[in-house]
Image (cartoon, rainbow, N blue to C red):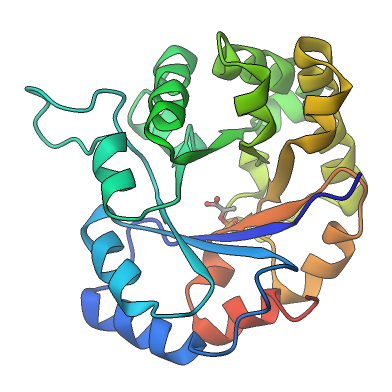
Length: 251
Ligand code: PEP
């Protein structure tokens, strides 16, 4: 089964509009062909429309870092899936560990977000991952499986097949500690087996699973060579254009 890889940057709470435009100018004409890899950047909501305008003909997909699960109403400060879709934003991260930890997002919220995105035609990038404590206790597989089951509850297999799931061990995010390629592959395999248990082999073979956690241009090749890893979700190394392009050199 050959799945098209997807490399996505996650800028988090960084950059101003001038820097966003400079970044896009620097990658202009330098991204790999779209048939080899999907390339996306998740940016603060304020910049998404400009990014769609600035990307021109570059095969750059634009992603939100978060979204709400309602499309309209009295929800001050939120952004709707339908708003993303209407502006040409193709993906949205949901359930990033920073959202779970600092903004108290639950699996139930994340599941509602996944459903609302699918309904609007925006592809969810559903994050899962364990703390260092859970990892050291040898409970990663059961933790990650439970997050995936809860995140996907009630979603049709045909929609799951088109989703992206990102396995991001919390102990490897922003710490410089990349999980070894073997550990990353093993846990991405757990995610795939969980999808298989819930939806069968066809859906499990189709769903794309990223690894995230201190991925760098120097580590990306080995991680991407693994059977169950179909891409990367990258924070720090996506912030500078040269380093972001470095992540894509293998394609
Ligand atoms: C992330 O925030 O999703 C991430 C993986 O960050 P970093 O690459 O900086 O560890």
